[in-house]
Image 1 (tube, rainbow, N blue to C red):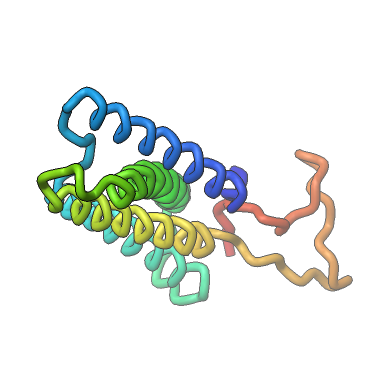
Image 2: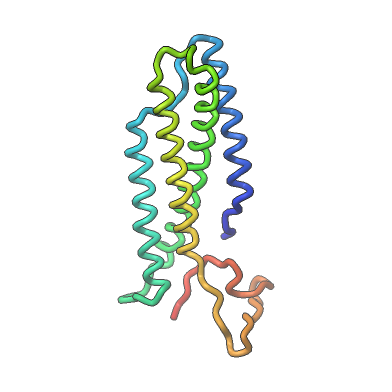
Amino acid sequence: MKAMRPVVLVVMVVIAALIGWLASTSTIRFSMPTPVLPVSALVTMGVIAGLTLVMGIRVLRWRNGKKKHMLNPILAARTLILAQACAYAGTLLFGWHAGISLDLLGVGSLRSDQGILANALLTGGGGVVMIIVGVVVERFCRIPPEDFEGGTPGPDTRRGEAKGEGEYAYRGD
């Protein structure tokens, strides 16, 4: 499994912000409600980020040697996938609500309900938290390169690449 690249996350934020800004501009033009998640969505975002962090800490403890028993490799893979999904979802939520916030800041006097801007800012902040948790937990799941007797990792003959370079996998000790 490949690691997330920060450039991809930044591009996703920019695209989502542009789409959110366009959506907010369109809703103003057609006198429709602004497409912002309610503040109650923060509870769901917090549960997802918290669950991801708890599962990531479990993998980190196993990786750092605090092992009472073997870690289930499926659990480790699911933790990695959840971390990446959390970061990607947070990226989209942050971008969308950042675009809406930019539009609302520009035309704030035209809107009657200033609570919409607060919702957009809070939900965008929740997206940032999800991004941070996702990236950190992804790092928890990374297997550190192992020092073989020669000091360099040997080639992996199954895939033709070096072991330990950004791999996410189960390590049986």
